[in-house]
Length: 276
Image (cartoon, rainbow, N blue to C red; front, side):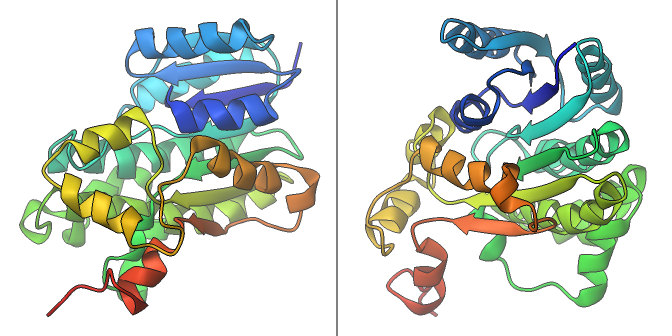
């Protein structure tokens, strides 16, 4: 039996983190498209890792529980890397809320029930949640602590209160961050830690979809006019994950780390600031 890493979302960011942290472990790769999980598994197995692909739908509690049961066959779950999700150009409002908001909340909750003592998790949110106007303390608490099966019934998440897919995505990512804070308290009772990483523009197939989508010019302008002057790479996200998931991050839990080349700073106080 080995320590097990669950990796959800068979993309470049998830794979970069898994390659950095998953050596010597059994890595269970879950993705809605089995062929994506199989492709990542093959790439990693060919590089000496020990992975197995599993079909998993993040919007389904049953599917998440099935993934966890599969992982438990190989040993104790000691790491979670959640990089699954859909972007504003890929899905309608309902799907974004069901996958990115509800599904992430369920995954953190269910893995938190079984995570090994000393275990760690990271989930990937987005800089996008930082550009949305602040919610009230009450709204933040509702996103953090509402029972998962009641989340999508919250008034602030009803269709009439969501402007478009970008707003839905921002709300989902804000919820991810608040959920990590609340789950960190529960994970801590098991001697485990959970944190969140909020990337900016990272070059991945998903980002390329965005560059070619309706907001493509907006995103290209964003990285051109952020302090770094470029988009980021999946390996740079993995650098942050390595800190958070290693012993060097032993005092870090319930936190969100923004890694966006300064785009958020520029949005509030620089050339990316919206013109009234």
